[in-house]
Image 1 (tube, rainbow, N blue to C red):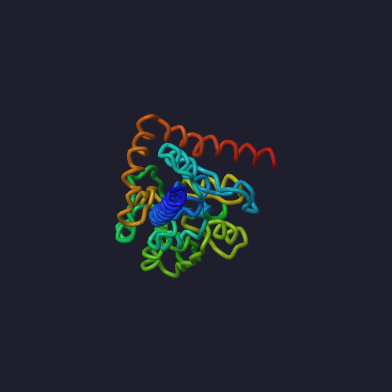
Image 2: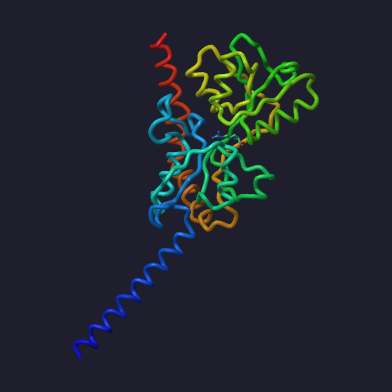
Length: 275
Ligand code: ARG
């Protein structure tokens, strides 16, 4: 009898182990998270202050910014752990498509073309394009860029827009780069005459580089940012109500003030103190 009981317990234990293993395996399939099933992996391109960037020039530590705060808020509300994966902007859509990440926040504009590959939330912030250049360059419109070398971020809507413009503007050459920071460095080094960058981000870079300036291209279609998910991900339906709640409660507005006003003011104050 004792032996029977022992065998019975062993069988139960074995069954239990198999059950636990299979349920873990299936939830791992749903999430790209490596550290247990409660982790969501977010792709970003942390070259985009104040949306996502590193506080230090060397890029140590975790990225911070507007998108990061929104992501933290939403995942916390939903009871997930957040893991951030920094990559070139151009690699984000392929990472979503391959299911290597669960969602992406990178100041990404929901274009019709991208909607064929990924799903988007509602737009949570609007932006416009600008020309960034040396302060004495005096560029105001695309036409002023005739004969100039113009940088854009590879895979961005700015790349498409600038290429379209270049078709009709004499001698305007487009140079794509992986990171926005490279565009800024190359303007300073004189290798690029200008770059097309969103106003919100141009402001952040200019606050740190007083020799540069930007002008907003009023002619451009406004672009905005939305959260991207792999096609048919069930996460979209989980995220949307929290994003809507952030809009209604004023939480989003608080973050807009934090990153698009307070942060700039602080950057400018630091610049002035350094001069
Ligand atoms: N909004 C533009 C786009 O979707 C540029 C976004 C670039 N984002 C970044 N984190 N570098 O194409």
